[in-house]
Image 1 (cartoon, one colour):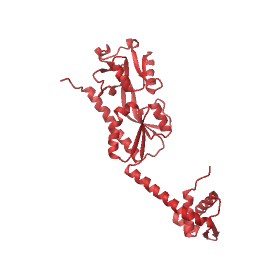
Image 2: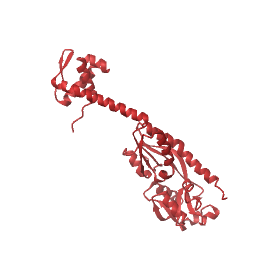
Image 3: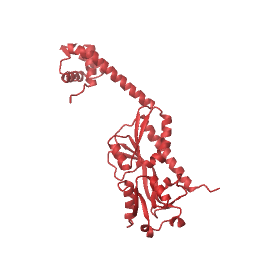
Image 4: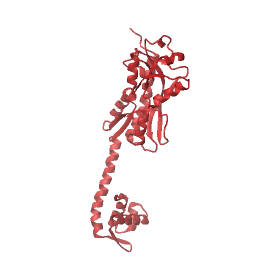
Length: 316
């Protein structure tokens, strides 16, 4: 494939053509004279025809040089205008922001952040791709999205950064009629008697849960592997099995009151939520603003849900 014309070479050529001298051109564009000479020579080599005739310290245009000069000026002017337009859009918060988020975050965490973001940057077009931690990791690595809100992947590549927003505890989610509700605790001795509703087997969440019980020499009997927190929550509320969910995900939902959160055991199972991004990137204005809103809003939402659990409303 042929190389495109280098705008820096074009800028050097135009300066020489207008000044009639490599020395004066170097002063105008603040480059050394040898650098200007190399840039013009490289442009001539790329185009394949001489653009300037050298005579001592003076330089004059060839026929090809004269034809290129007018078009080159328009090309540089267009490049400058495009740069200024993009910079103005960035300052005003226009442009686009591509996001990914775990499906449960799409329902419980992201809407509050995006509401504030939309009020601050109404001109910014944003998109959200629902994705688990594993899938979101690939979207970030492939530069398909700029930011992903997910649980911390168990295997985090060196090229990807993770910024922690909050930590959550996973608990048993059982129907109010379940025997464990009487003592508000689970008996590890009879865990293997019950059927469990777990995340999909390929997910980090499944692996995290499996590791936790394997360390205690327990293997759960899996009734169903479900792709969303909402499905696990709904089935557990109907008493179809024991779910394992984040404690905060049970509160403030249609199933609240039908579901009871039971600790997994004396040693809680915790995991972190946060933001994935590619290391080495320079985030734009809108991306920086989105991240800052996540830092301030998401932990507060989780704290408020925790308070709801600590101070449940009494029936009137």
